[in-house]
Length: 280
Image (cartoon, rainbow, N blue to C red; front, side, top):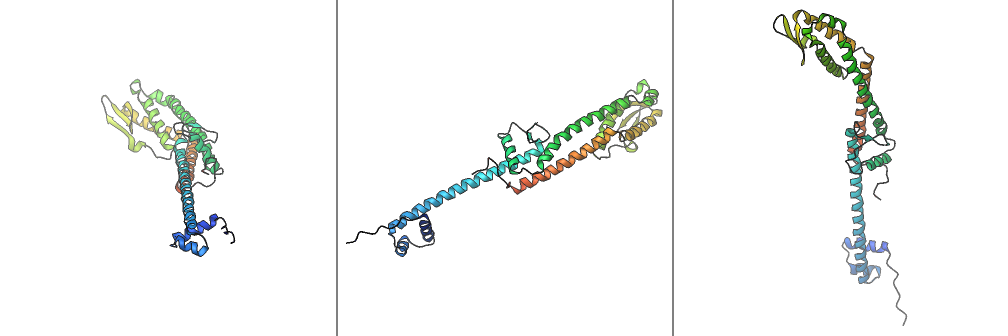
């Protein structure tokens, strides 16, 4: 009597095939009869194949969820860049970091590794410089308005001691107006916004928009009107005014471009490239 012939081991490809046939409606005995195996062997390997499939699907689900969370973290970080770029401390990549958010610096590194050639890095580097320039030029403009109007010889000569609210009122009004003009807004005008209300003893209560100038002699209203027109024209010709105008335009351009670039990242929801923190 010849020894019983040993069946070759069932390869993973074979048990995967059996599982597919089983899921397609073929019974283990039928598979066994067709392939020359014992039905118990077929059932055993179908069970193994099912376990392998479940493990693979579980791992794929974990990886998919990890990737989704990773991309979401990067997108949320990118959104925060718009609001953070004018505050906080600047990292080695020129971006602002908020220490209150866990792993914020690492997320910055990750996004940089994913998108090393993105324009956002250059835009983020430009922003602090422009913000500093804006603050310096604004301070210089305000100081020049205060000093020059305070030393206006005609006003100092013709206004009386009782009209001591005119120069401070002009300084406050024109300082506020200059902030409007450099942003392209019209602001106040003397025809519509220089308001005088009768007071006593030949005086009027004078205001320019919301800016009060106190009591002014009736005959000096035209002096103040002329001063407003004159100083409005002068301020708009100063180099510091034009410098601030240009800085604000540049800052607006940079911020708009930055928002556009970040919108692409956030709305795509998938960040191309890889980083050291990408799920395996």
